Image 1 (cartoon, rainbow, N blue to C red):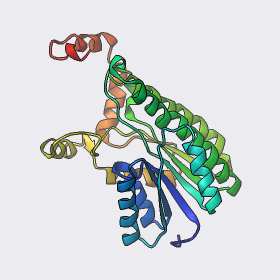
Image 2: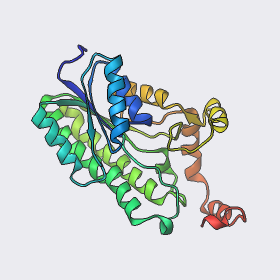
Image 3: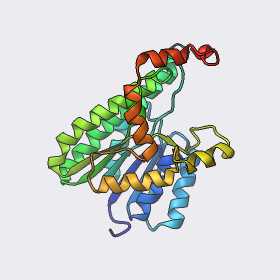
Length: 265
């Protein structure tokens, strides 16, 4: 691919973690980058870093993607600027671990906006453009937790499960128009979302319990460009998502009654 042509990749949540890795690696492939985040300072830093290391154009957009109007505003901006988005990375999200009663209404609405409303409209608007051009790639970040309907992850699990089913249906709708849809189901990824000290991160990564975000992004993009439908990264995560669903409910209830955990519920 020739750098600086009019092929663009749009990455939501591109200012840090996995999203930043997606933006940097797509830039290395020659795609111009639109990175979208609600952290304006970090987003601009990422844009400047990519410009220094890759011969591509970069647009850093500040946007609260939980806002119901954000998808239409992003699409309108790209249309007005003549930016043809060939790769759409739906990565923005928040990690929620708490029982529903302690989860604020604002946090719930943010999760629904980031994981349900905005990705749906982004896929509709940019997917329609891709179908008209006869080419394009959409990547949707779901989660391995879609197979783990357990306490403390009710909202996170439900919204990520929506993405799983939505993407599976969209795969059928778009594939005959030359547009691929790839859904990624990561487990624990070593990003700032996990507030762990280095002494814990290093052994977890060595054991394969956690994966480096750079590695995840590289493998996920490879499968996206191969037009794979699904990708679950890491042997440990693959094992967990097969074992966890067959654990009887009574085992989970027993764990919840453990004296050291009872206060959490």
